[in-house]
Length: 94
View (cartoon, rainbow, N blue to C red):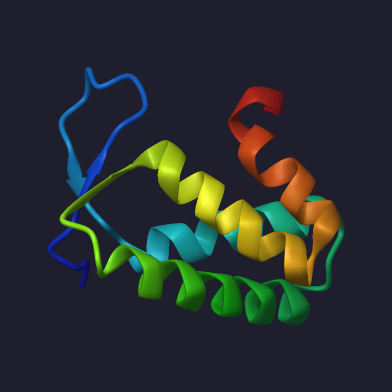
């Protein structure tokens, strides 16, 4: 279940959507796996980062998808610098 926080999409052309912790978690796991992190480590790292971002987001009525990416990257840098480098660029690279 998502929190009652709107996420404004990058271009602003698509409608907002509710913050989805699981979607954020999956994206961080994918970034970790893309740099060949073992699955268990990727899930653990993603859980820690997602917890930090969730604590940040609950204080906001709305955030942009760019804000979420920036926050996740900042916290991911602490736990997995290589994945943090690729995380905000993931959609651009693929």
